[in-house]
Figure 1 (cartoon, rainbow, N blue to C red):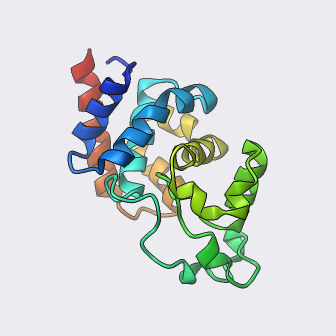
Figure 2: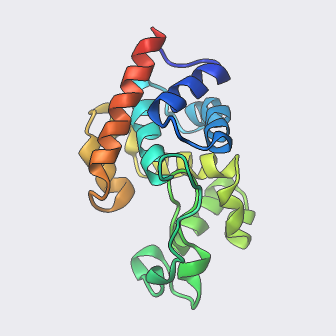
Amino acid sequence: MAEPKTLEQWMDVLRKVEPRGKEWILLGLADNMPDLIHRFDINTDLRQQHFIAQCAHESDHFQVTQEYASGKAYEGRKDLGNTQKGDGVRFKGRGVIQLTGRYNYTTCAKVLGDPDILAKPETVERFPLAATVSGWFWKANNLNAVADRDDAKAVCKIVNGGYNGLDSRLTALKSCKSAFAALA
């Protein structure tokens, strides 16, 4: 297999994974892949394939960069760091991997040195942040090591907190591996 190198190759891979993905999301992720690879060590075919598969599912097949739900269900969720009134809605899932909760937004803003992530959470819906926060989450949760084992179920558990959408994630991973193989 060969890692995509050009924007066109990344777009081809992403279209093969999710042919009905919205063009602005496909382009946003494709354009940011070189930075994600370098900055967050998503630097092998297998890591990239798992990352893309998770992004595909988490963004509803590259349809959205903001969770559909209002976030009210996250109110008072201390495990997400939602300790202040309104945190659930304010820090609902955003990005191609859905960054969720005050704790994740706060930690990500500090690590990336971008106060807008916390001050204006809606900026996470737009590229390049939609990709960057996803790369940060990936590395912060040591997902490269899990992807290196090709353990899609374990990757899903860390990203989702459970196995929601496992079949969708596995289908995206299979499509991504096939798209990479076609580059060789």
